[in-house]
Length: 124
Image 1: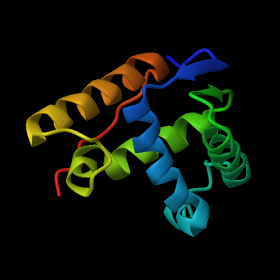
Image 2 (image 1 turned 45 degrees about the horizontal axis):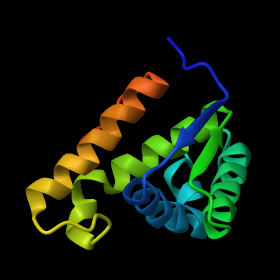
Image 3 (image 1 turned 120 degrees about the horizontal axis):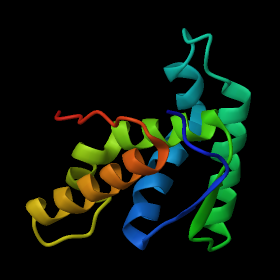
Image 4 (image 1 turned 30 degrees about the vertical axis):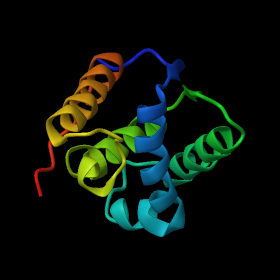
């Protein structure tokens, strides 16, 4: 079952930090590299979402309008690329690793429920 779009994704400061960190990397050529062999992904729509999301964050916004399947895929890629190892690089401000991982897992599970998708755990 596909998610009903559009969806306004309201973010906590921690969730915003996780996405913003990864969106920066995707904006700098990472998105094209990841999907270069995937004919089903709309790279143009994905890049438009990345640019719009970063503009929203830089303007102080705390919510994103997710309105295309490409936007959902970009968000999933953000989490798969940084969720489980992100707390090691400081994306989650937390005094201990267990707490950071719990916050990140909770965010991933929320997105899975919202978008009816699966976010793979990256353990390395």
